[in-house]
Length: 190
Image (spheres, rainbow, N blue to C red):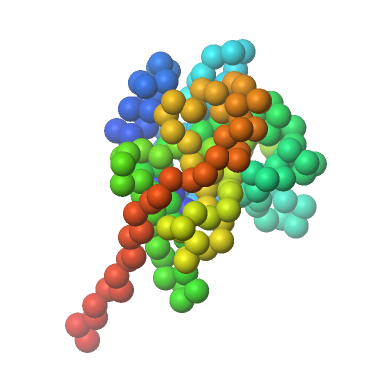
């Protein structure tokens, strides 16, 4: 389960440039958490475009659904239409999980500065909203959490967004090894 990730404006610009999308103004960056706005790249009329969207689909309980399981996203009524027709990616330099001691643990790709989180989006309550797809954790993440974001490479982004068959294949791909970063407790002087 992914509930925090971050990226910088330079990374957002790099993503848009690599995908041939004009740079968008007023795009959020920094640490992104549930209900916050984030940059998403999505398809519209066969072309890729950058948008700002809020993280989380409203849930019946008044809360937010921020993640969907890649293994079942096509069968779940809340997510199936978006999974079929409205897929997106979000840039991330790092994502965080919390261990059994409630300590935040960061994960990043040692091979690439940018990771792409696979997601789905929809219009809910008049606003663009997205959820992050998760998959079974790999060996790096499993000691901290059983789930992790579905990560895509830059070369997979357009296929994920535009091609359902490609998306179905990518939902089953193994996740790359990541670097684990444990945050140190702040030392107190008094």
